[in-house]
Image 1 (tube, rainbow, N blue to C red):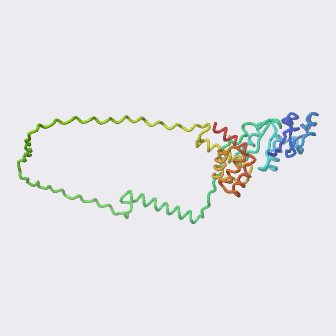
Image 2: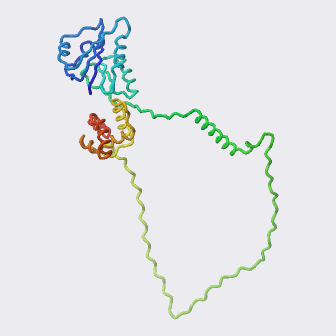
Image 3: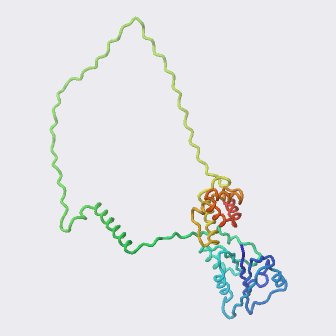
Length: 323
């Protein structure tokens, strides 16, 4: 990504320009200096003469506390856009407040470093952020809102009245107690006594043959005790299906990454589709073909064009998350 470096010369002096000779034509240097900080060492001047990056100089006024810091923040807000990377080159950690404020609005392309050639600090990685797009809340007309509230209050009052008898009656009328019916004793009917009849036993049948003894029945096999059901093992995180937390972490990473580069935020379905397709693709070409197959040529290619520059970064983050 093309990068704009905002140099706090009062803070880093000549040492902050280390790595300037490695910049590309698409990069840009904005140097903030003052009467108290307006000198550079000869090796740094030589490196700046060799750099391909464009260079601009802004002079800050003396006599005002933190004037250069205010200048840097002001210019950053003026030149900021989502298509470039912006790096504040300063050892002053007060600029971290500016970086975190941009992050809170989903702008993860602003960071701070001590020198130009320093690697991107770990704290600047977008997967550490927890930025969510707020859902749009439809507006409700005042008349409709009041009508809904009145209706809800009437229903609530009716429900309370049904549970507590006496609330629906007019004042001055006491609820009449219910009269209990008088209990009457029922006379028991006389039942004639009869002697119970003895059950007649069947007469034994006389035959010439002696009764055969009954053969012993074979014992039925006892059912084997059921083995306790094996507990389902949790899916391994490395190589297996991802957990819900891992999927959410990747979706959040994609949300922050895409939000920093595109003004139009991606939907939750689009983020999930990118994650699933990237996870199941071996390389960038397979990712491209999979998107076309799932969405069709027109929509698949359009979505691919939005994320193709960040495919390697997305693929690496997914693999690291599954470890």
